[in-house]
Length: 108
Length: 242
Image (cartoon, rainbow over all chains, first blue to last red; front, side, top):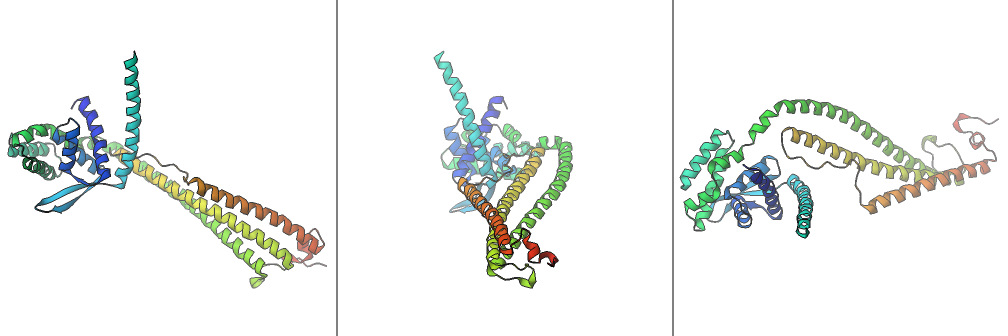
């Protein structure tokens, strides 16, 4: 995996947390939503979900759906909520600084 | 690549990398195929968009890093046990102090109430004129309020300190095993400005009232007894006036 992919993965993690903060989702929902907006391979979301679970930031539960197999839902833990708030602030600060830097370059 | 080919290659790659619960992961991708197929995509298209199964399997691997850090983890655990023992003593001491302050506050309140009511249970309170007793009673009641405010703040302080230590404990363990680390917590309680102001106002008012009434009580007692050392005049502390 290149540096670019590594970098994207870190940001994707933040996006997944952001989605889960709004409501509980099943894996495909998250993968579908993100791949529509960001250029990633469809498969990359599942390793991220697994990592978040092993770190205790999300939990899973099964829920029966009408006319289909039960789906595995992902839900943010209180630890995840806290981690998301911290990472979000950090990222926004970082993005703001980078934007400012790149825009300066236009005036040269 | 068909769905079956993809899933087979994925589970092979996962097993080769010793990823736990690999069947769970394969199930997740199987569902992905089911959803996409329902949306009208062919198996080939879906597999191509998912990425290579071997690359994906590599992303599930996280165990290698943990194994390398086992030595460091043991050292951290031993250090943490000692730090816990030390913190335990420290918190026991803080709790003891909290108890002492609380007991002091209750005693002050009881004695103050007895003085104000003009009662002396088991003759514990030495005799003194009722007027002086009232002034001392107010003074002690104020002292009770002051120490109670201190008690409340100290309790909040201990709670925050324990939470802060708990966070440190959790973070140390997490970073030793390569897990997620959370921001540290402040050791001091963060109260709302209103609550802060309220506690401070109550404490200051009570302290002032205590000091004023205490001095006033002494002066009133001196005048009532007609002597500077009024406690001698009233025969306190087993002293018998001639």
